[in-house]
Length: 363
Image (tube, rainbow, N blue to C red):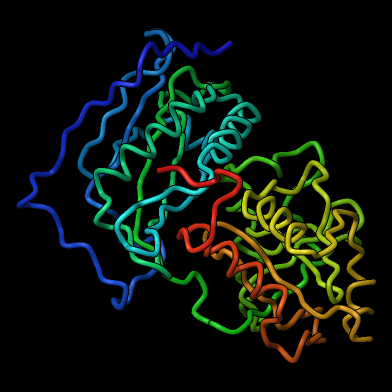
C-alpha cells in the first residue's frame, strides 16, 4: 500500500525574478499548442522510504535528468492529465474548470498503473498555486492556459517491478484553437489496429495508449484526415473514440454516444456536455454504437451531426468520415446546431457569461 501521508499543503517557492521572466504572448500571436511553456513548473516527489509525498516546489521550468536505466524509460509507468484555466468575461479573474474531476481521474490512472495516487485535494491545491504564479500567461477568451499534470516513475534499475519512488509535476502553456481548421475535421475509420481493450488500460491516461496511436494517426493523415476513429478491439464493429477524444452523433435533437465500457476514457468534457445537453432539452443515450449503422444512417441523412469532445479541442465538428477509399459527408461538411450550441454553452460557463449552477468553476 502507498502512503498518503501529507500533514499540510505547504508549498516551497523558487521563482524566476520578475525582471528575468519572459513576456507572455498575446492572443493574436501565432501559438502552437503545447510548444510555449510558462516560466514555472511544480514538482512534488513521492519517496516511499520518507513517508510518501514530499513538499511541492514551484520552480523555474527546466529539464529533468534521468539515467539510462530509469524505470520510467523501460516499463512505462507514466500518466498525465489535461485541464484549462480561463479568464472570465471581464478578463480579471482566472478560473479552473472542474479540477476535482481531473484529480479523481488521475488517481484512478495511478491505481491502474500501480502508482501512488496523489491526494485529490493536494492535486487541486498544486494546480491552483501554479496557475496563480503564472496567471499572466492565461490568454483571454477564446484562449486559455493549458495545464498538464503528469507523474513518472523516479528510480533507477531495470528490475521489472513497480517503482517505489515517483515524481508528480505540472507544466503549463498558453492555448488557442487545437485544430487549425475552424469549420470541421475529417476522421479516418481504423478497422485493423486498436486503441485499447476491456481489461486493459483504456480508461487510464497513460503514455502507452497515446504512443500506440501514432502509426494510425500517420496513416489517417496520409488519407487526408486529422484524426482516427477507433473501433472496439474484439470485433471492430462498435465506435469507441475519435483520436484522443470522445465522440457523439446527433439524430436531430437526439444524441447518442458510446457508453463507457472499460476501454473508453471517461472524458470530463464528455461528462459535462452530456449534462448540459440534457438540461438544454436534448435526449442523450449512452449505448453501443455500431459503426456500420452509423454509416448507413449518414447516407440516409438520419445522422445530422457528428462531433468530438475533449479538454484541448473542447468540441470539434466532424464533417467527413473516411472508410477506406469511401468518404461520408455529414451536414455538408459544416458544423451543426447541436455542436455549436453545446460548445457555446460550455465556453459561456467557463468564462462566467452564464451562471455556473453546478459549481464547476474554481477560483
